[in-house]
Image 1 (cartoon, one colour):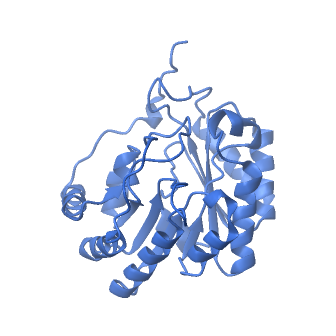
Image 2 (cartoon, rainbow, N blue to C red):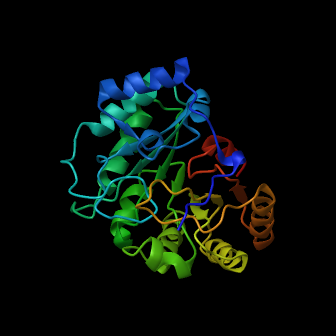
Length: 285
């Protein structure tokens, strides 16, 4: 089947500025990854210009192989125990005011990387006391002790993506579970009622507006404060095909549905990704 043509409003050229060059230089020097580069995010120049970046820790090889994701699956790299300090130093050198820390899934590790998330938070707040930190973590297989390790390190925002509607999990996320991700978000609030929680999903895989509404209801029920919604774009022919490109009016409708359900803050647009305008969104909650 012929791939659907990308609408013009979703096209964004590559912009290279002094800021993007500086970010790449520091990342290369520290041997660090960002999801901005690894997942080919279309918004990286805008985020870099606003002193925001999303660091990808624990290597760039994932132990899962979700059919929508551009990050490679396979045998992961050994853990760099110095990575938390390197990330903290890069954040300080870049003068960031808001940093997002995410990772590949590391089901192979005893603590699945939860300890590394906590250490990045601790090291960064030592070096940059005024920094705001958002974490975007895998599901840690729903193990509450691992979720607690990260929650107790006190990130400013704890993000875990639901990714898609329940019906499409087997198609898009066969090694994940919809109910497990909801329970994950619920547990964060049970551990720390004041923690801001966040989740995100993509559209364009064949979901309906009714299914999106139910997902928002489910997220509201577990106390999720912020939700991001963006258009899925097929990274390659090996990935899931786009069933539908949503229009700007469609995203306005999605925003309205989420607000009616009671989501505190909804960011919905074609190019929105999990950490898009993360600082601005955090500031309004």
